Length: 247
Image (tube, rainbow, N blue to C red; front, side):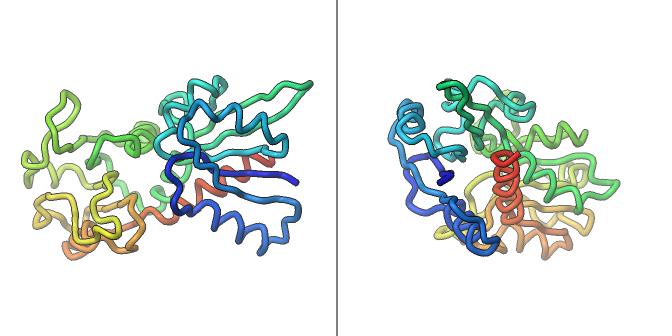
């Protein structure tokens, strides 16, 4: 049996387990299972892997995407530059366990964003600067899209929400929400920005996917913007993990 799974804490529900369990059934993939491993401390990770030799692939979610770097030294380019890992390939050779860390969030975001980009989409605004923004910034750098970060609290690398104005929104036509604002059950929340300045030239992307049309996307869409939620990104990053584990 080949085992794959997700580490994080808590893991009350999981897109990944549902996705892979259904995948194994629909694609007639035998002798594979995907489990949840809610470890209370990232230091328990090596013991988890050594306790079950059938585990050959792990996804990583909050709060361990950065802390796991202490145990996974070999990284792909995206994970190294982002400084976060959400996929680990596990190989066993001559009694040794070999880990390699990847960031498939970046792949999922890039692949789902690119079909929507137009020539005038050269500058972006990122709402939030937490862990979820790390992969977004990496992809925008890769695509040579400059970006401005907007946060609730002052910092050297960002501006405040109240500083957003018509001029900045006219110049930055890609808008990306990396905050949990709008996520169910708080679906009535949204980034506080001057939506009246959003036009058909804008592309609004929300990493939130539940509900599918967040208040942020609905308000942007009302101004004529193209909109995209994070569901496809989620599927793409999961499938990329599967490709890594089975390459």
